[in-house]
Length: 323
Image (tube, rainbow, N blue to C red; front, top):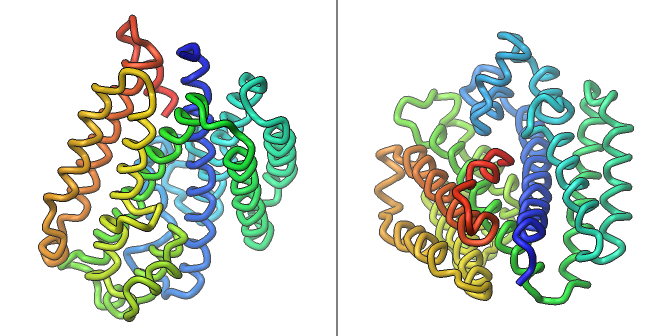
């Protein structure tokens, strides 16, 4: 069995890499969306701050100036924000740097190159064109790094911990993006929001790279009553909640003594299967459901930390603090 501190490093490296890619895609898609919408809608730049539960930290550093420039700087470049892209990728780099003997040689080269590109680009993100270019480059680089890992690593415990981290992070991010659906389903939503619902559901699919697969599976116009079940329960699409949580269990099961986290993972699967998704739509319960799932995913992470990272000590909080 690999050392617990090594297992924790590669687990968090994979989580941070997945989070970086997802945040970059979401910011890119959200920027494109707002260029096509009127300015008097419930979905705006500040929606991104709420999505990441970062209201308090944003106001601490930027006051009430919730402008596009401030929000983008906070989410991309501000290292006082542990969830900014600059902070996230710095964490990727540090965890790769301290795990070089476990990873393919090309991993460090790509990670370091990406780190340099990002640092050289941060000063120009007030320009929307430059910002979008950086986000697209970051997406491509994250996918390249993941491709190197998937194509060159032995399927040993190092790889399994990385896969657990990837899919657990993916489930959490999917749940957060689906929270945006609660705005689209609210009974009190504005007439302007209702008018653009098709565009907004399409944007939500694009934020998860799901539009093409959705159209192949559903073969109808984009509407919430089809998008929500697809992104929650589709067993073949790798970014659905169900698929990501199922895949987490698959890799947990290949690790030594996984009983405690597997109980929690199975509870999550059963909870999802119990949901009457059509009833969530008119009642607007999506936000409550996603909040509950995020709490349960946090508990699953705590079980993973207790089982493998701190098996002899009650120090899960140290690991949770990284998240």
